Amino acid sequence: MCITRRSDNVFVLNESPAIVHEIVIAELKLAADASPLKRARLCLHRADTDLVHEMLIVLSQKVFIRPHRHLNKAESFLLLEGEASVLFFDDEGEVVREEHLGRDSSRPFIYHIRNPVYHTQLVWSEYLVFYECTQGPFLREATQFPHWAPAEGSAEATAYLNRLRDRCTRLPPAGSRTTGSAHGTAAKNDTNY
Image 1 (cartoon, rainbow, N blue to C red):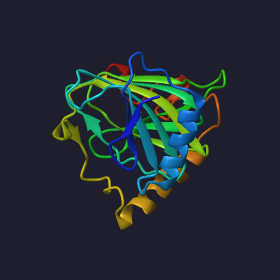
Image 2: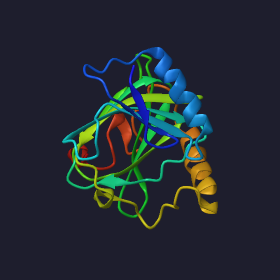
Image 3: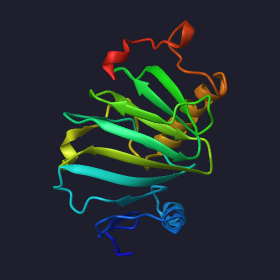
């Protein structure tokens, strides 16, 4: 397997066809633990300029993903291992929808975002392993971070993450769909996502 290291937590699989084995996931978990960002990714695309970006991503339970949104691109997420919550926010930072993700039959394991909506993941298991697909090319300025969410690595990030976690632990367990209103509907129209 021909894998090159782009940084301490980003790797590229330089083969076609790209075949990924369990040992790669184990190595990504080690890389996520060693990374200050507590995450690692294996890019199946070769360059930031590629039109399709496919990645195998591992997040440690200690990770903080700053809420963000992507301009002019969709994002697909397929959970392979672990448990997490994905939170969707309005422009003021209020959680408008929450999904508890897992591989048991009562929880969703895929989400797709069509329109720019602020979102983040909270990892509940030791690791979260997922496949993500989005459009390229990668443009740093096409990802927006809101003023109400602290920067990753900042002193405020840990407190913010703990507040989000505390909020989620008060919600119903597996089988819970959203936090918006009764009968599993979101507070905002689903077409916004």
